[in-house]
Image 1 (cartoon, chains in turn cyan, purple):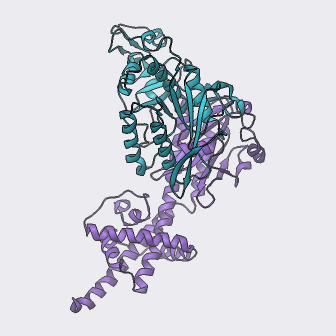
Image 2 (cartoon, one colour; image 1 turned 180 degrees about the vertical axis):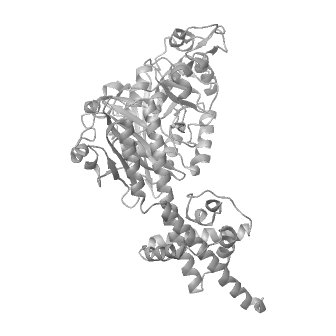
Length: 285
Length: 282
């Protein structure tokens, strides 16, 4: 049966991964150089999602600011959300993953899911614009819009972030058709691989989806102080956001495209020398 | 100009009839395609989903704009029926999240989530331990959510399962799009008829020019579809009719701008383009 599967994760799964072995473009760039010793201290990471539960053990008390987007007759505005609720658990899951990599990074919650679904694309965009203006170093977007009307809006915002030195990390959307901003060149787009290793991540030189990170059966924080096991690209994105945060702390002079290059250079399977019959074991090292 | 009026009126009446016949044919075709009800198609999709996944239940919830909630329309599987007719807010639970963000997600160990839709699950009579939820996406955006609960031979869903569920969701979205084309075409038909018969529609000429040039020739078999559609549209509320009038206005403006140039459009994109597009008939 020839199924028309959306295949963003395909390059990162099973035997296909072997094709991602490549010679490291910057020979001396290794993980120790890239982020060794970094904790995310002094950086702010925004999570645009369902909110972050302030008291959840997984976020370690690092939630510094919490806002939500309100829609009034299509007009989006960003307001303080001191209660810092997460009615789903998903935003807390993403924040918990990021905190696991960068325990000293400050977290900003931008809640864009509300009871009124109309104009949700506008709410995403307003939340993203706010996070860019707020000066977040890294923004995690485990969501996207499929609305054609939002294409130019997100395109402008992706450019604005890039020029403002804000790194956007966006989960690929595993359903057919384009989704914004996850497939824009300026963002770090992420799909899931199926290895149980938080530090294993792959660079795919054949975009649109450029990075594969852990996203299958991930033990994540969930609402009400709980944890669950979850699968999806939206859990892969915060892995890359967390690692990128470490790089940004250690190399504050690196711009978004330089961070992306460092991520590619330090990806699993990227070796100082060209691989010669390299065993599979190298891929997970 | 005034000397041409009788001929123009006759020509307009002929064109109008051609338009009505063409639209009626399309309405009838779409209605047959729909096989009576999109729910029948959706039901067969969730039944196939349950069988393929060997799951305890599968369901489809569709967004209901008037209430701004997700309403569970069809379900299958031994534990499926309890959810029928229930609804949830679009910012609640996994289904709400998947609908709002368009992200496909699977979770297991649901029992660890003390508050996970517990009240809602209790109402359905079944509390799952693993769920995969994928969005139903058509060309206009996310319109609902397909959920599969508890594979019998595994306690979790794999990445492949997520992607496979997305394929079923796509089929469901296509079925819903087909029924929407039918509904929108019918709505448009009544507006066209109203405009042409009360003689006041300034956009009628342009509409006729646009639609007449592009629609396939009606073969007269669509009469019952026409009657059916008109009867149904009498029940449309004023707000819906106002929306239709706006859409027709947009179509008329577009026709004026583009003249008789043929446009290619995709079916199901929206009432105006859907009704005036030749692509369904090619």
